[in-house]
Image 1: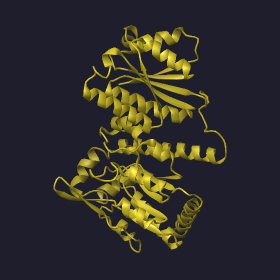
Image 2: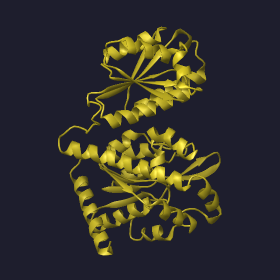
Image 3: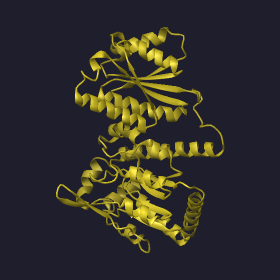
Image 4: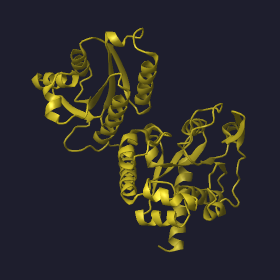
Length: 390
């Protein structure tokens, strides 16, 4: 593609985003999504900032991380950059984005890098994505960037693909609320070449990165995740703009209601919640719920504090991913699940089951999930069950 054609496309992108900015009272959110570090998200954001600036838009760089890359640094020229705010933590002076300074300055558009970043304790918000959501609520439009492995609902998949436990994560709801999501794509070969040339990390870190996170197969699967994520978001946006319904797979209806059943098992609950969130998106479900049945041994005065804290954290995770929380007290767990499923007209139950030697061994022994499967098999209710192994 010629440079002239690329510039025309960028001009059209800048003009489209400008129309969005001018047409809304709340701020507009645009997210550049990539498969990994080094694909060019920050460079693309700065290119767009330059284009908007040339169109007369009041653009401010709220937080940019160039990592010393020459091409990225060159894109800073001529753009106003807000000084970072200095915070002291454990005797050290650290820098963060100056959220208050941005609100006071009130630009039309602010560029904010590294959306998944965790702020220094003492900041206005714990996470940078919360800063961005706040700025948008204040009527300031934001252009930001994110790697696909930082999406909350994909955490378990990313862990299986890469073996890396990504600790900084962004709730999917923020991405769903974005006005535009752009996939910054790069082939696996191109990305690994950039890494080998020292354009992503310090040369000393390159061999380790190539053998771990940046293995070709890892990057290929992450690329597929990124493409799929943007495609789903775009399909939803097109359907919404056209006044239609979210397209669903032919096997299921868009009036599906998913019910995720969790207990106090921390890791199992997380996997069930994230999997149900993905299923709800895929099916275009009318609603999805997370049900916690509290038995007598799990009463507030009996359950240990650490378990209780993790349970509350999981319920908060479910809320961030868009679920409605249901809590029921009962020692008849199967009966309680069936009752709630009937009340909510649930069409799909999502439950957890441990990884054993064989599925038959699991289904033939007694346990809550096994009893629930037997109960559902005997009922006339139109209800399917999806098992999440952990």
